[in-house]
Amino acid sequence: MRLGVIDVGSNTVHLLVVDAHPGASPVPYHSQRSTLRLMRYLDGDGAIVEEGVARIVEAIREAVQTVAEIGVDDLIATATSAIREAANGAEVLARIEREAGVSLRVLSGEDEARITMLAVRRWLGWSAGEILLFDIGGGSFEIAQGADEYPDVQVSLPLGAGRSTVNFLVEDPPPREAVSRLRAHARAEFTRVRDSLFADRPRPKRVVGTSKTIRSLARLIGGPPDPVTGDLASLHYVGLREWEPSLREMPGSVREYLPGVTPERGYQLIAGAIVLRTAMKVFGVETLTVSPWALREGIVLRYIDALDGRGAEPVAGEAA
Image (cartoon, rainbow, N blue to C red; front, side, top):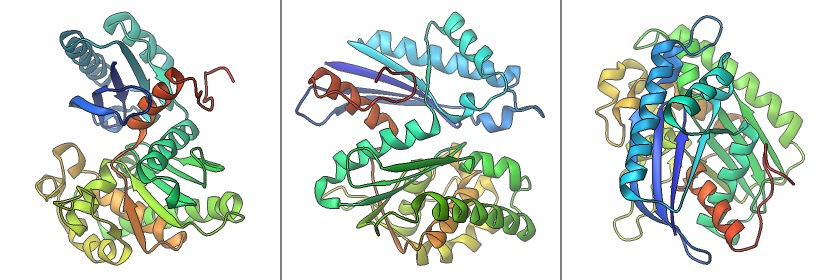
């Protein structure tokens, strides 16, 4: 069957169309993105302003038009932190349904972590053992850990690359004082959840990173994917530490031309690098394995599991 997934994130509206059936890996058929950068469209009360809402609606309309042209057997539409945490999120959802004809299911941060862990586990396999997962979005940073397809513990923090940029790194390029404030804030948050939620977990066999920000940093620092296997380069703490000063001195308009960096990510890459390096430091991580599968692939896998009669652990809004 052919399945479409529309993911409304903080940076993009991403449409992924795959051919999928039980017992097989989903095969990508079509992918398209519309750039949003919603963190730039929040007012002082945390509501998405009219221009931002209009951009969301138009991007979803374009995705729906593409789906109609391709033809799919089913369509799943989700939203993450940008709409979830917006002061006018309910109004935005109602307008999207009214004007674009799509009802978005809003995932919690914990749901994002759980579904992403499923995708990572299926990509790496059971031999990966206990996995610690870092997932950087535009608005939130998810951490999860476990030895099964769904994590035993997960948490979502408002430390996404876009949100951290807007909240801490307003100047471009940012001054050292702003970088230090972001690093100190991130360190305090990561230390708090490490000590309260992850202290009793066994040492992970593999630490995995997902998201476009992490993939961009891995491509920039570690080089291109393996030409034979297609595996993405690992991301090492030492390399991230060495690159950070250079990224800090570049304006976003320059960062977007770096290898592996797209225009919608260049402005927030330094915030992503700072937050990720801080997380690696706090959790004692020297190397990240980078997974190409993340939230969207996890959504597809859950759908396939339901078709196969295997079921899937419920997330917010689903019946247990």
